[in-house]
Image 1: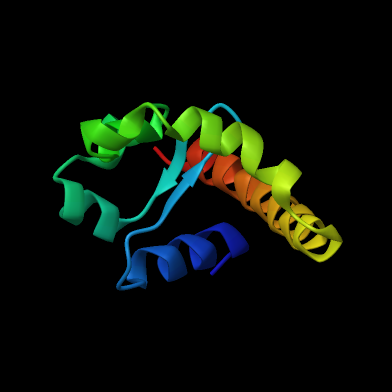
Image 2: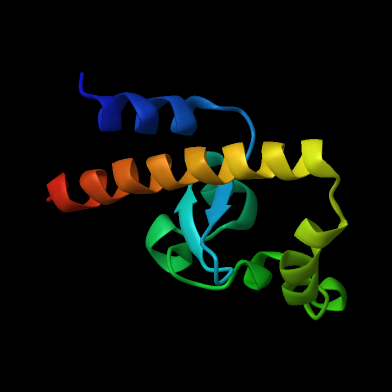
Length: 103
Protein backbone atom coordinates (compact mmCIF):
# COMPACT_ATOMS: atom_id res chain seq x y z
CA UNK A 1 0.00 0.00 0.00
CA UNK A 2 1.46 3.39 -0.93
CA UNK A 3 1.71 6.38 1.40
CA UNK A 4 -1.35 8.17 0.03
CA UNK A 5 -3.51 5.07 0.32
CA UNK A 6 -2.21 4.44 3.84
CA UNK A 7 -2.93 8.01 4.90
CA UNK A 8 -6.42 7.89 3.42
CA UNK A 9 -7.17 4.58 5.13
CA UNK A 10 -6.00 5.94 8.49
CA UNK A 11 -7.96 9.19 8.26
CA UNK A 12 -11.11 7.37 7.13
CA UNK A 13 -10.85 4.80 9.92
CA UNK A 14 -10.76 7.39 12.69
CA UNK A 15 -13.92 7.53 14.83
CA UNK A 16 -13.81 11.34 14.84
CA UNK A 17 -14.79 13.71 12.07
CA UNK A 18 -11.68 15.26 10.51
CA UNK A 19 -11.83 18.46 8.44
CA UNK A 20 -8.71 20.07 7.06
CA UNK A 21 -9.02 23.57 5.66
CA UNK A 22 -6.73 25.59 3.43
CA UNK A 23 -5.48 29.11 4.13
CA UNK A 24 -8.71 30.58 2.74
CA UNK A 25 -10.93 28.51 5.03
CA UNK A 26 -12.08 26.10 2.32
CA UNK A 27 -12.24 22.41 3.08
CA UNK A 28 -9.35 20.47 1.56
CA UNK A 29 -9.95 17.11 3.27
CA UNK A 30 -12.85 15.47 5.05
CA UNK A 31 -13.13 11.91 6.26
CA UNK A 32 -16.02 9.45 6.26
CA UNK A 33 -17.10 10.43 9.78
CA UNK A 34 -17.46 14.03 8.63
CA UNK A 35 -19.73 12.90 5.81
CA UNK A 36 -21.83 10.84 8.22
CA UNK A 37 -22.01 13.54 10.89
CA UNK A 38 -23.04 16.39 8.61
CA UNK A 39 -24.90 14.46 5.92
CA UNK A 40 -22.89 15.82 2.99
CA UNK A 41 -20.81 13.82 0.54
CA UNK A 42 -17.10 14.51 0.23
CA UNK A 43 -17.71 16.04 -3.20
CA UNK A 44 -20.21 18.47 -1.69
CA UNK A 45 -17.69 19.63 0.94
CA UNK A 46 -14.27 19.80 -0.73
CA UNK A 47 -13.51 23.36 -1.82
CA UNK A 48 -16.44 24.84 0.12
CA UNK A 49 -16.04 27.22 3.09
CA UNK A 50 -15.83 25.43 6.44
CA UNK A 51 -18.49 27.85 7.68
CA UNK A 52 -21.20 25.71 6.06
CA UNK A 53 -20.60 23.15 8.83
CA UNK A 54 -20.89 25.69 11.64
CA UNK A 55 -24.17 26.92 13.14
CA UNK A 56 -25.14 30.26 11.61
CA UNK A 57 -24.83 32.06 14.95
CA UNK A 58 -21.06 31.32 14.96
CA UNK A 59 -20.23 31.72 11.26
CA UNK A 60 -19.42 35.42 11.21
CA UNK A 61 -16.60 35.07 13.74
CA UNK A 62 -14.67 32.29 12.03
CA UNK A 63 -12.70 34.34 9.47
CA UNK A 64 -11.49 36.72 12.18
CA UNK A 65 -10.58 33.80 14.42
CA UNK A 66 -8.54 32.19 11.64
CA UNK A 67 -6.82 35.47 10.81
CA UNK A 68 -5.97 36.60 14.33
CA UNK A 69 -5.19 33.62 16.49
CA UNK A 70 -1.53 33.31 15.48
CA UNK A 71 -0.66 36.74 16.85
CA UNK A 72 -1.78 35.75 20.34
CA UNK A 73 0.57 32.75 20.67
CA UNK A 74 3.82 32.69 22.63
CA UNK A 75 7.01 31.39 20.99
CA UNK A 76 6.27 27.77 21.92
CA UNK A 77 2.75 28.05 20.51
CA UNK A 78 4.05 29.64 17.31
CA UNK A 79 6.59 26.83 16.91
CA UNK A 80 3.85 24.26 17.43
CA UNK A 81 1.64 26.05 14.89
CA UNK A 82 4.55 26.13 12.42
CA UNK A 83 5.05 22.35 12.79
CA UNK A 84 1.32 21.73 12.30
CA UNK A 85 1.34 23.93 9.18
CA UNK A 86 4.35 22.08 7.76
CA UNK A 87 2.69 18.73 8.43
CA UNK A 88 -0.55 19.97 6.90
CA UNK A 89 1.28 21.09 3.78
CA UNK A 90 2.90 17.67 3.46
CA UNK A 91 -0.53 16.09 3.89
CA UNK A 92 -1.88 18.46 1.26
CA UNK A 93 0.70 17.20 -1.21
CA UNK A 94 -0.31 13.64 -0.44
CA UNK A 95 -3.96 14.54 -0.94
CA UNK A 96 -3.13 16.12 -4.29
CA UNK A 97 -1.41 12.88 -5.28
CA UNK A 98 -4.45 10.92 -4.19
CA UNK A 99 -6.81 13.13 -6.19
CA UNK A 100 -4.69 12.89 -9.32
CA UNK A 101 -4.43 9.10 -9.07
CA UNK A 102 -8.11 8.39 -8.39
CA UNK A 103 -10.38 7.60 -11.35
